Image 1 (cartoon, rainbow, N blue to C red):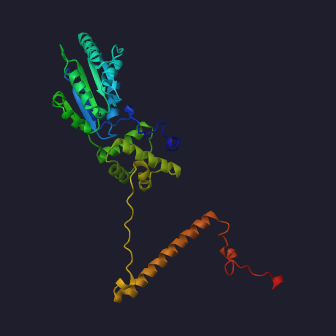
Image 2: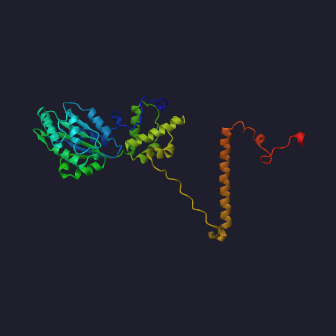
Image 3: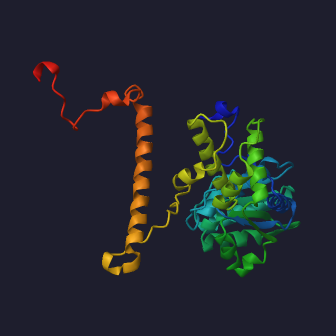
Length: 343
């Protein structure tokens, strides 16, 4: 919508994961290294947690895209699974036909597959996104698979990614938790990282002009988004749409107040209500006349201001009628004067 207006060739703030857009903050770089080490380590088992929209899936995509060498990746992104569904999904990701859909039969089939891959010297890596949805039984099954040993160590390396509750689900199973080599949690970006993140995505999108989001705007964006990349994207995208709609080449920080409820689903705090005026009997006798006069004056001023704003709007809407205001005035309200011939 606003790409041509701002001179962009790609959408800078899409909320869907795009690994070529990923901003590698210090913590994202650490998570990337941990995931890569899990892939190539014989005892690789890493759990990466983070808030919704913190960049876990994008990071996984970048990790997968950068894989080189002889290995077999089994990537699972759908995790609302029944008891035996996990084994069936692993077999299909491995390119195998399920010979018998009983859980025991599928376990033996997976075991034979892992033994063949180990004998060929090919690492098998299981990556599961949104792993917080896995049942305890699913996690127990993963523990069992990681416990299978080959000549070079465990037959399967594992990377689990999910929301913060994933860590609690894993640590609730001591036998599984002890096999995890690293737990890492992705926090929100800092304010300075938020500024760099916004500038980076605009740069990748082709923007080469002046800085669109100033320091005050970035500060407010960081405050509302808590540094979560997906929320940053939503706010920046909304502000750019506002600028495009009003045909202005700059971002107005005041737009955040009008769009935050629509984008984040939050109620904008309203102005504090003024206390209701006291009844006449409750007012001190010696202050009643002064306060009444001040209140009346204030009310008249507000009415006058409102009328001036209304006149200004009417002038913009009906410019021709407002050129000679006296011509449009009708004496005595709606009563028209008699014509000279009828006097």
